[in-house]
Amino acid sequence: MVYISNRLAAKKREPRHPPKLWTLDPFYDPRVPAFSRIGPHRIEIYSIFYGTLLGDGYGERHGDGARIHFHQSHIHRSYLNWLHQRVRQYGYVNPNLPKTLKQIGDNGTVYYSLKLRTWTFSSLIPLVDSWYAPPSYPGGNRKKILPHDREEYYTPLSLALTILDDGHSTGYGIQIGTDCFTEEEVNFLANMLYRKFNLTASIHIKKKGWRLYLQKASMGTVRELVKDHICESMLYKRDLMDFRK
Image (tube, rainbow, N blue to C red; front, side, top):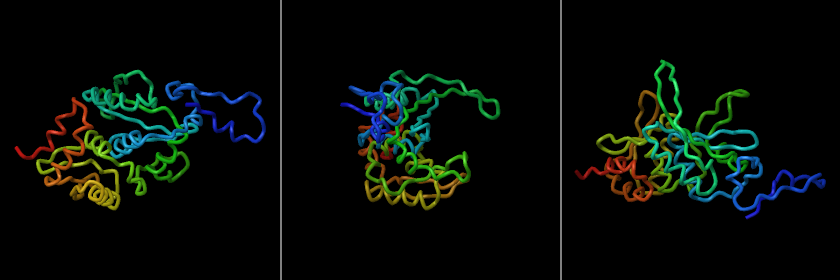
């Protein structure tokens, strides 16, 4: 596979130097500029990004492109290493495993976490922009929103990652931490899960916002959907979906 800088190719005049050809898979090389990382992206990659963006992950514009961040507590090292392997095989991240970082919270509490981020791709800009509203002022923060026009990218793998990132058992089903989304967005998510996977969900208001609950009657279907997409260290979350005991 050969990649040519699309910025150079767009120039009308002949460049002073011939465009650089990136042979094999250029994504592993950190020196490749964002505008040369142009995809196309596999459905598995989109599924991973959509699943984790609905959970604890976040995206950002960076330089000439955009990138995706994954963030987990150090107690979930095995999970993040498993996720790292899934995206590393396609050249989207640094081949080295994520390192544990020491951080200090607002109240002085020390905690440890692991962070993983993709390389910067110009072709990830539409994806990241679909998940974030424009800032209310120049340089301001962008609020996460739920895109309504990319349902095809939300697959059983995406569902598994959402549960692994932000799913908790209630004793009557699975609660998804959707607090940052509006009531309309969480309703859309519930309807999408019903249309795509025949899952029954309800939404409830909590102190921080609206939360989605996958109901007990759907747990058998959820288990079947996600059983091939859960790493060994997180099997306890699959077991939380078993209410036959």
